[in-house]
Length: 81
Image (tube, rainbow, N blue to C red; front, side, top):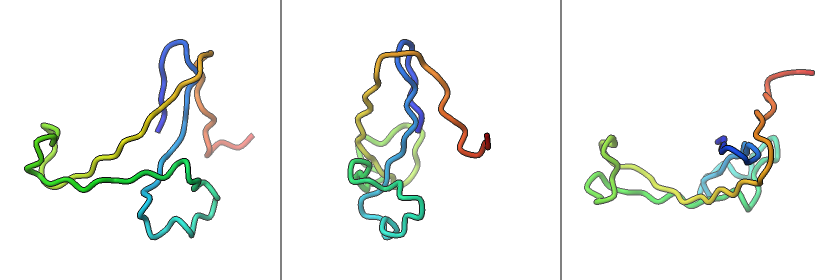
């Protein structure tokens, strides 16, 4: 995910499902304990179901903290120098 806000540095990061069977097979060593999250299964009749969601769904909590500074685009991982 990418988080942007005026007056803050751009943040590019990701999160991982803490219950994934594939955490130990991370080929690029991106999985860190601080990036693990618990995804909570929700049913279609859950009172917090967003209006545009049909059927069962998942929710996850994730705090994003931005650092003051100049916003900039993150490096393109597919671009070579």
